[in-house]
Image (cartoon, rainbow, N blue to C red; front, side, top):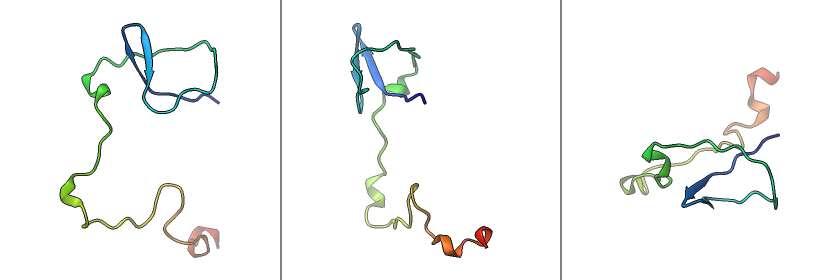
Length: 73
């Protein structure tokens, strides 16, 4: 399985944005993003939403128990 890692290329060097690949040496394919938005920092919710939003679930686990799923019956 292929895994992607985000980096910024500056003056001949790659600067890893998050995690680094856990290898010493590898052949790579580089895709250049010339759009300035590619260099934007990660987005965060606006401060005006602070205290007004309730998170009901996440992308890893469902908000409803599996026993309540109609398709499993």
